[in-house]
Image 1 (tube, rainbow, N blue to C red):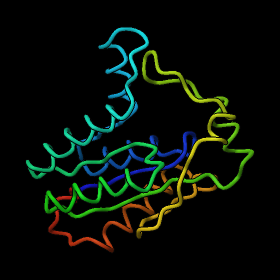
Image 2 (image 1 turned 180 degrees about the vertical axis):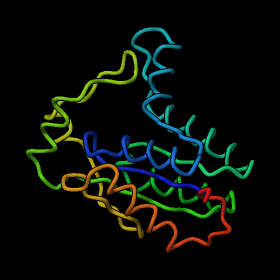
Image 3 (image 1 turned 30 degrees about the vertical axis):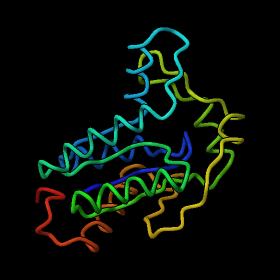
Length: 177
């Protein structure tokens, strides 16, 4: 199964994606981590562009081919990027579950963006201004939307687990009961 998280920086997607991956014992693929590794691997000033997503796609495809459940954590801001994940799930004959994390309270969202510390060495967190002007296309395909402004990470995890169990057969390798 492929579980794809998306949402603007500071919405709680990494927190929730990690919790879910741990809970269901899935492979966790974070595009920010891969991008930062690429930045370190190349000379200063090298433009990484879409390379992080490209590497994440390859790592995800490989793990899906072994029957693993994969949780992908990325902003996934554009519709064509989200379609690439859908296409990968179809090519891998894998179930797909998409999750968009939002933070509907702008004050809470801004505070999270401004107060969080980078947890990837060398990674520069975006400013609130950068988050506000970032291009982010609305999701059109069916997906689960979680508002992290008013849900604790544990409550959001419980909602996701319930939705996963309601929409996917228990025989699918999603979680260990």
